[in-house]
Length: 422
Image 1 (cartoon, one colour):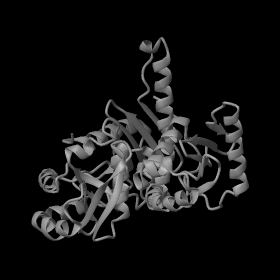
Image 2 (cartoon, rainbow, N blue to C red):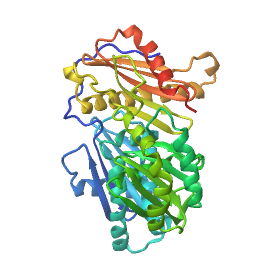
Image 3 (cartoon, rainbow, N blue to C red):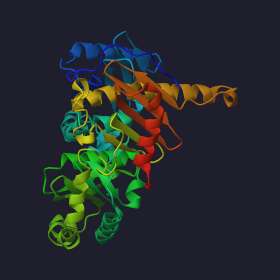
Image 4 (spheres, rainbow, N blue to C red):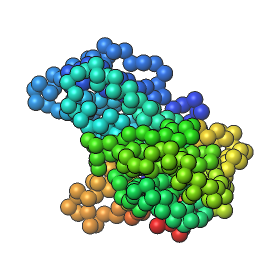
């Protein structure tokens, strides 16, 4: 276990959890698009041009550019067949593996939006620039404040409900009627239930699909072509979404039949109108992300729970509903809690992986205990992380919680949130 002495200060609501500037260029250095997250000022193009020049010069000498650290941040280069990313991260907590996976997922979001053929075979830069505009909504969803946690943890965000069996049975029958095996029901982009085959898709595919559904949350119904980055990067499928009630959508990945009109006016009414009471039950898990019957200790004010085997997550910054941390001035804001816990996640996750990797590579690893727990104490809050065979859990506590009790409360919270769940 790793522990740290209390640190002064905390996280302000105006602070961003992670500030970075993402730039996508052709392999020849022609800019395609830029995204700034949590960083108000735009990085001047001459700076990006210089960084691109560094990468191209290194490439001409047979050297692959990767990660470079400075006192204030990180520069990361990643080149694919026809495009390259330059990522500027304005902090030092992220390790290379984390950033590489993040860029890989962002690249796969481009494939989901326009397909691998368009991305890798197009020789017309202006056409590619226009196509890249189709990628913007999905990229924006991945990097949106409400979804950045799932993006950074590289998981598919879920929402737990009390009784899911009825919804799963109806969803399975509904997808079969559409000659499909891939379907899910979401609440504000968080997967509530899904078919067995849906969960057999790659985690990046299920998470990207959930972001697309989230982007379409204001549409009554939609029919969108999507490419599965691993399963079908060249041939598009249809992603059908229908809003069943406010906040609740059903999404099906299917073939050319039936039409959206038939789905919306016949099958939806037949299957889901009788289940409106069950659908409304899903809303009881808002804003907690789990049913109100589950009651964590009052000192637990935010949780990130990762199922590392299945690539799922449960993320809650409202562990006690809208009354979470209402009596704690420094932690009463959701944004403050989110930034504080994610700041801890970045450092703790990095620490656990680095230490465990080092032990695995050591010839005397059999004599070394695997690092499974770590915690941090600040003057405004405390945090604890626990790693098991199937889960990782990161908990934000009130500053008043006794330090010696955090391990016990973290294990109790993990048991509470994973009980009776496969």
